Amino acid sequence: MLKQLQLQVSPATANNEILLKEEVALHLGFNPNISFTIKILKRSIDARNRNIKINLTLVAAINELIPQEDFHFNYTNVLDAKRSCHIIGAGPAGLFAALRCLELGIKPIIIERGKDIKARRRDLAAINKEHVVNPESNYCFGEGGAGTYSDGKLYTRSNKRGDIDKILKTLVYHGANEDIRVDAHPHIGTNKLPQLIEKIRETILYFGGELRFNTKLIDFTISKDKVRSILISELGVEQELPIESLILASGHSARDIYELLYKKNILIEAKPFAIGVRAEHPQELIDRIQYHCGSVEAVSEVRSYLPAASYSLVNQVKGHGVYSFCMCPGGIIAPCATQQQEIVTNGWSPSKRNNPYANSGIVVGLELSDYEPFKHFGALAGLEFQKQLEQKAWQMGGKTQSAPAQRLLDFVNGKVSSDLPSCSYQPGLKSVDMQQVLGKLVGPALKEGFKLFGAKMRGYLTNDAVIVGVESRTSTPVRIPRDKETLTHPQLTNLFPCGEGAGYAGGIVSAAMDGERCANACNAMLSK
Image 1 (cartoon, rainbow, N blue to C red):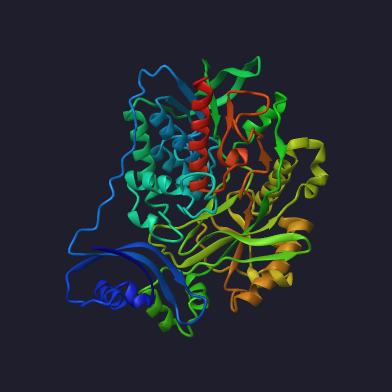
Image 2 (cartoon, rainbow, N blue to C red):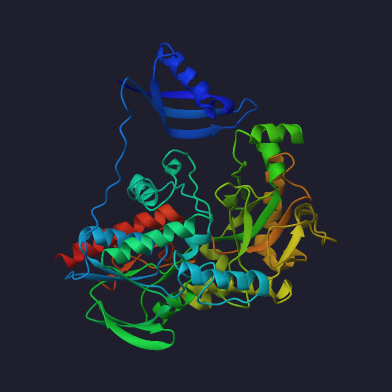
């Protein structure tokens, strides 16, 4: 007999199978000595008050086994397939588009400007230790895209855009922990994502797909409303490839792609995005606030049952949203520039979220009207706004990958910090007046936002925290338009703008779902 039920239990009970089975037996009204098994289907934390609870949906099996799910995907060998699709970018959108192509009998050919996972690591070390940015291989470009080193958060609100559970099953099939299908806010961890991405690559190659690293799209030819060929550069050697269809999943940092489209009079549009800083606190402080602890000892006790605490904050400040973005408990602030003369920050966490710091993007939502000083750049106005701020951060950080920074309370009070707290950002910090970095629009909005956040989370507004600039790649400031039904560009009937870089996703899962949608649309076009 199988019984599904919902329980609300203490963290201690949720982490002890014997105690949990006693709760289940009590809830179902049978003798706890009866032999039965349980499986947790969904899990979330309710920490809104001191009496913290864990919400569980689970199934109990009495005198029978709980059925085990068999993850099966209909990948077919496409080595000699008659249909093909070229995919620009090996991030989540591009990789999942390729996997879907395998299911549809289409040969995916991925063109990735960056390096494979292992070779990419050397370039990441060069940024952190030597302050040298390789514009083709960094935290944004390379196998897995920005997603490989972006924490591995899998929560999405885009439940109408695709099959979320299929994406999660695909990740489990390639090595992710099954808990990602259980937790309300699933997370893989930056330390585990690279191996998973490598296994996805192995699947694509095993079934006959292609993946070309160190290969960059530099141009394409158009005839009769179609892209007829693409010009690529592989380690400096140019080659023209005829194509049937093109999924453009180049990511939110591929500025040269936007510039190429703009130069060729292919329609693109400026879109709103957000910009700000990374705010980093001691993780123990965030735990104490969020888990309602009055002492270090209490934090230690609650953390024996609960993960590192996170937070989500939002307020309106003079018509602009100020909010937390990509909060990383127990995490690291990473240097994510794609050019030498800029500073870009992002955050990530390992799977255990056991680093001593908690960081989050705190950003200001911008509207098209905020780009007015850059309107002569047309659809690239937001891109130029973004560039200017990143270059200003580089200048004020000392023209290395050291980032400009300020203690949080000092920033709000307009005081340059005499020193800075320890921080997870490896290239180092330089104490500056962050108002000068952020400018007259973003700086004042952030100051007011931080004050409001301090009122919501007592203890958040403190000089034990540091803000690090700038958090500027929250999303793309450019949208590549597409038809709602065919997903093709309005001018090019075989070009499929896809994922974050085109403005249709915001995170690993939503990008993966969009990749699948574009592969389906590509199949529909090729089937005509």
